[in-house]
Image 1 (spheres, rainbow, N blue to C red):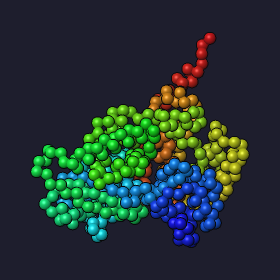
Image 2 (image 1 turned 135 degrees about the horizontal axis):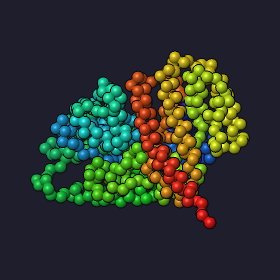
Image 3 (image 1 turned 120 degrees about the vertical axis):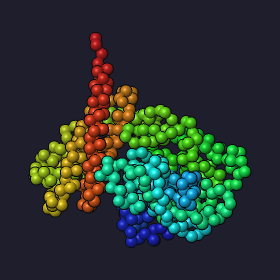
Image 4 (image 1 turned 90 degrees about the horizontal axis):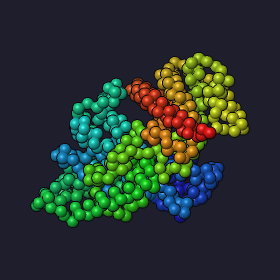
Length: 493
């Protein structure tokens, strides 16, 4: 059995390495029980419940029926998709991958790191200069809130310094692409406006490409391929609309597409496939819509609600699914301790009051355990704390904690049932959830010992300023709506 081979290959690995290697490469469906057997054989102690919870929340796997799972690598290896080249790319015989390999490749891998092969040979890299609008169009599916950062991460853009320019791109941008000259030679006299791609190695980001040359005497006539791609567009529209109704807006556009393309790979991963970009130009029912401060695929022209059939059962008091439960992971505790060190204070009771507010929903036993954890971490961190080394992060962390507590207080004030929750302003509730996620991510970064470049530090400062402005904008609307909800609970007799 293939699983046994994996065990022997990973005997010397740490648990983190084992899980990463497994989830990036295992090609077959597996159960949590089978994975638990592997971990037990490697002397790692997990319960089946812990492992199931981990797999259910890890974006590198899909949950299947009958308590089975499959990795992204297993789901998309060997699958085909197509890319329609822009006129600029055709003229220069170059491909800028951008977001056009979504959802078939590793979402954590930058597109300029993807490797493309033709007839077994790796295609060389080649830069292409584009105007700002054209460049942004090629990164649409990462979301309007992230596409500039993705572009700025390209080695060809290393001198842009976008943080210093308020995240504005210059009029002209150079991006890293791959040369398609071998494909154009293969296509001969045919017009090579579309290339077919096949995922060869998901973990390594290797994609095979082939020219799909077409010879049309009449550019306005419908060929058999055009008719098949029309059907492909119709299928994708149907499947996405169904996913909106069943799943709601997923964590991102990539996740929405990944679920749909995996569930319907037989219809969508065909050699006559279209591309997501041309589908969005074609569809009159689906578009990219705002979701709080982010963007998602959704019904065209409609506001995306915070609550729907996909999550309404989980939106009761104390369990609002779109707002993370107020927890205290290690990095939050470390952030409070380091902030007190940065402020040159040393008061454990004050730390405990901040980290464990009176309205935190935990038992007395959990509270005692948390207090002991705070005292232990405080003793450890103070020994190695260096105020000068922490100066840049200290300022950011202090502002982030201040906003974290404000957001947390507003979240704790939201006490309503499913029906009442739907009376709250939906987009503002979505934004509140997103602010909570983004703030905790900044705290996770600043709680660590990693060094950060000046432009990254500046980018976090700007991001925090934007979050503070967003919070001050939504707070009165949410607080006012919650006041109205409470007022309706009282009947005048």
